[in-house]
Amino acid sequence: QKEVEQDPGPLSVPEGAIVSLNCTYSNSAFQYFMWYRQYSRKGPELLMYTYSSGNKEDGRFTAQVDKSSKYISLFIRDSQPSDSATYLCAMSASSGNTGKLIFGQGTTLQVKP
Amino acid sequence: DAGITQSPRHKVTETGTPVTLRCHQTENHRYMYWYRQDPGHGLRLIHYSYGVKDTDKGEVSDGYSVSRSKTEDFLLTLESATSSQTSVYFCAISDSWGRPQETQYFGPGTRLLVL
Image (tube, rainbow over all chains, first blue to last red; front, side, top):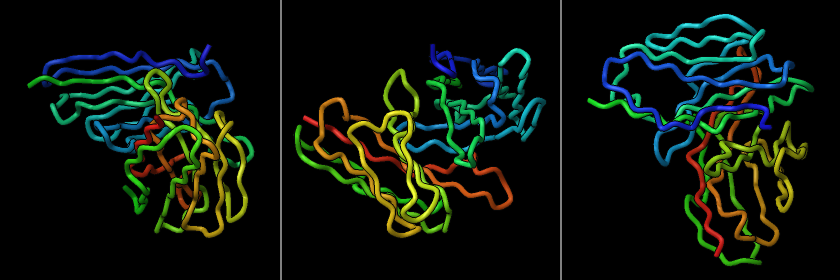
């Protein structure tokens, strides 16, 4: 079993829809939770990060962490065709100050005009 | 791409040949990482560096070595390339100034095909 599980999709939604992207994990030591967006043939770019539990909002994006359920989510409101990309969750236990991240497989999102 | 360049961007090589990929940063970040990305596996850490001449292994380090002689450069070497090393390789950097070092910034990637 992988430490971080993410449904690869693809997920297809109409423009304006609310999108929910999710990851589950097994390591209770994870403290940092990241979401990256990756456009085709590009490097991942950091969208948001959260430390421990709770919600964080940035514009149309909201990240949620539920450590009791070992479940994290990224919500995209009013989705746009420009949001079409692969979304990767990543996590770290931050042991030994190495900053090592464990990534999910990524979910491919397509937002149709 | 946060002042990170990777070279070459594309490479085709033959099984058994050595290959070196270069990551160069202009951000003066302390930490540098090499990942590979394959379908169904996401990004997997190969090696990382926490300072000049300080490196350590990641999740999939077999068949790879790294070197960091300057803050700005992190080299990844495939000693004897195999077809299983065909992948897209990403370099990432981070530091702990004002935000967690877990917040890593990625380069544009190198596509490697081993025939």
